[in-house]
Structures are given as C-alpha cells and as structure tokens.
Length: 305
Image 1 (cartoon, rainbow, N blue to C red):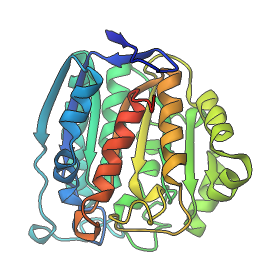
Image 2 (cartoon, rainbow, N blue to C red):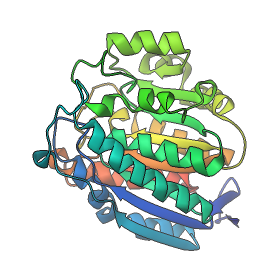
Image 3 (cartoon, rainbow, N blue to C red):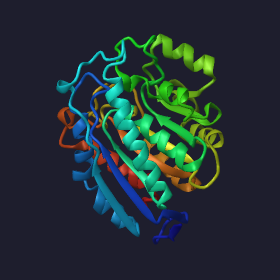
C-alpha cells in the first residue's frame, strides 16, 4: 500500500511507503576500525524520525537495534581469513528475519548500520520475502566482492557481495555497483568474471551521474518496489562524509549522491534501503550521519522545491 503526496512546487508525484520499519544493526565485527557500531544511534540523533514524519509517512516503526556481540568477547579467526564470520552470519540471520517480517507486514525496511557485512542479512530477508532476489544498487568506494581467499585483510565487510551471491540472494543480471575507486586485484578479477556492471568513479566522471543512474535503473529493474539500495557512506567523497572507517578521496559529490537518490524516488522502484559504515568516532559534528538522513529523505521523495 502506498500514499501519494505532492508538495507545492514539486516536479513529480511521489508514492511513499505507507509504513517504514527502521532496523538498527550496530555491527562492527566486519571491520578493523571500531566505531561503526554507533552508526544507527548517530543517524537517529541526526533527525531521522522528524525527517521521515515531515514527508508524511503514515506509520513509522522503529524496532531499535539488534543485539550484536562485541569483538572482545570472541576469537577473531573462527574462520580462516574471515574474521568473526560465524558471529556475523548469526546476526545477519536475525536481521534477515526482521527484514522479511517487515516486508510481509507491508513495511519498507530501512536498515541502519553498522559495517557493510549487514547487507548479507538484508538481502537474504528481501529475497525470502519477495521470493526472488531484488534488483541491487550498491553504492560504495569498494567492490566488497572479496572472498576469504582473495581478501588481503580477512575483514568480512569486504565480502558481503560474494557471500550474498553464494547464498543466491543476488541476481547478477540485476546487480549494479556505483562509485568504485578502491578495488583489490582479486575483486577486479571477480567483477569481470561474474559480469557485474560496475561504474567506477572514472566512468561517472565521463558519463555523468544522470546517465549512470539511467543505465543502472534499467539493469536493476523497473517494477514498483523491486530494487534494494545498499549505500556505504564511504561512497561519498570524505570532504562531504568524513565519518567513515575506510575513506578514499575522489568519491561522489554531495549533489551526485542526492541526484542518484532523487532519480530512485522518481523511478518508484525502491523497495528497501540500508545505510552503512557511518562512524561517529571519525566524524565532524555528526556531519556524515546528517548527510545519511538527507539521502534517505531524498530517496523517499523529498524535493528541493
């Protein structure tokens, strides 16, 4: 069920979800640098609820945060070169259940991370709820398509795409990566071998974000609520989003990121959204969390005029 809204001066009709289910996942087991476990709280503190309410969302359900073990309580190398993998998969199984339940109850899952390993659970839940993998737009500086064999670090936040592929929760023909600029050699080979459509920052520079998003949306799918967006805040240039653990210069600009989200809203295809890798310990005055909220609102239909 959707609610149609149109504010004065808007250039489009926007179909809002009637219900949004916010699910926090304070996961930092997938990364070496600590602090992303505070990301869900930082995003809420940055005005998520009042922002969503200002759009006219009929029902907003915040489920709080899932319980995530702390790194100090567990052995890091339970799986060779995939640190904390059993614990991560356990949390992701719980997340998958929460996402599936939200969709079956008519909700729009809005998942707040946490490191990007949480996408394993979100994608599993969406696949179960819909009966097939959603189209996927993956915004990130990194490919996140390493395996324990190819990973230089063993950090699972660099592996969620590979794990989701192995679990059959990604349809490679409908998967697009956007904003890549720091890709390991093993990831580069896998992206080519698997035929994943990946837009590097060089390609975005040449084509422009509007053309990139036009192609990405054609690939991911045109059905209502058929696309999942997994947005790593390090996809944005660190001058705009300093509060991330793996910052890489030369990322998406503020306006490029908003344009991408605005085009998603225009297309009416967004069925779920997750925001990951916000690290308040490395942020400046909660700027990155505030930008995360602004991008969420743009994706859901907020307009400039």
